[in-house]
Image (cartoon, rainbow, N blue to C red; front, top):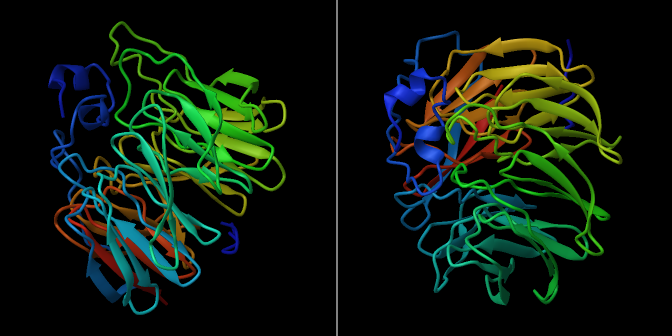
Length: 394
């Protein structure tokens, strides 16, 4: 097997015993994470460390992600890393040295991951604002209001910035001015995971995962759906058992294959133009997967890591060493999969063999947002705001 490196708490224990995923404890709508899992994560054990994580630099970004651990993941473009805290602090740092390039304080609370693209930086707020900043100095270019709080990173194509709000509304804004272009609305279940899917936006269409378990493909000219598909079907008697959110981001390959994860559902590979199902696997995941070469890597709801053959859906390997440790979505650096966990450790798993090969701790406050990687460099932000840059060797 070879992989190309160039491709890239609130409910009772009775519900757990009834088969509800552990994620529902912290991610139900209206429930704030306390930072302590209400279940039994696996203890970390020694292993043969064949990769080293060396700290290059660290900075503190404001006061961190807040008590609710807002998903304010950093982003990088070219040689600059951008990060923020829940109170409105935004910083730009040199990716190699960590030297600050600028720092601003917005007059609002930030709630979404950051998106850095084409010289601009986009983010969403708790009161439903979307803000565009100039990457050169942090100056505000425009600010627009959408329907509700924004937890998902805004997504851009050449003309539009597409924003999915927690009420399920999808709004397309003009990237240059912030003017509204179109709005897509959908019905929401009465109970959802705390969070929302992140659209996958390409020039002609946007692929949008909904809390109802449906995937919609929207025409970027008008916001009208071209096709929709039920990825996960609600089952069970209670509303909690019937949660089927598509809370990850769909990912698409250059040859037009779409991969979608779902909570209490399945992983599905689709032909993106018509939505024809190519294969499906009975795996529940709230996270965005990652594809590297011909392999799709998925973090399950109980934090097992699974490698699937992207062409067939066949399971290649599964690692449960980190089960119930609330892993982040996977990233990829230096031939290894990268994850953070609730105790603030960064773990490396060999992408070919599925074995643990490296580990270090960033901060005991925990890591709840996906690391950002570039080559063998990893930028990871802990819940208390510590941003640490690590280098994978060999």
